[in-house]
Image 1 (cartoon, rainbow, N blue to C red):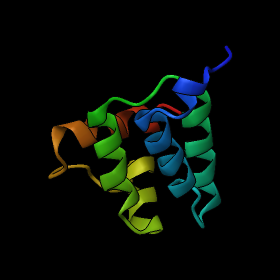
Image 2 (cartoon, one colour):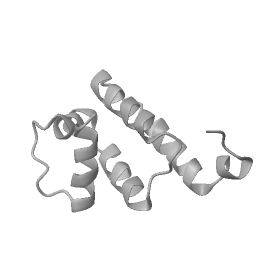
Image 3 (tube, rainbow, N blue to C red):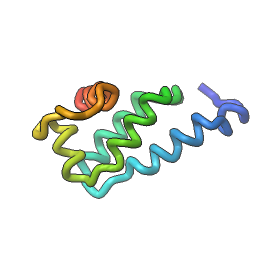
Image 4 (cartoon, rainbow, N blue to C red):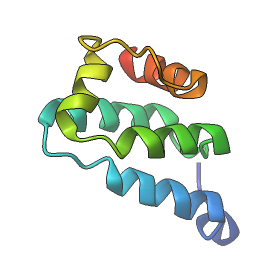
Length: 92
């Protein structure tokens, strides 16, 4: 699917491009999960709630984030939106 110039410059596209860049992590495992996530997401922009959840999760250091993604750390205490987003990542 080709993107128009207006879509390429949309605030959602710019936001998602920034988030995609912030997904580049030091842990290969996280890089793989986020690469799969963005491949599955395609050109569909994240919802504002998804973008906020991803922003909060990406604020974590790599090892605590990986522990949440791989399920070795419980996601109790996370906002419901973040837990739902984390569940999507775990399916990849």
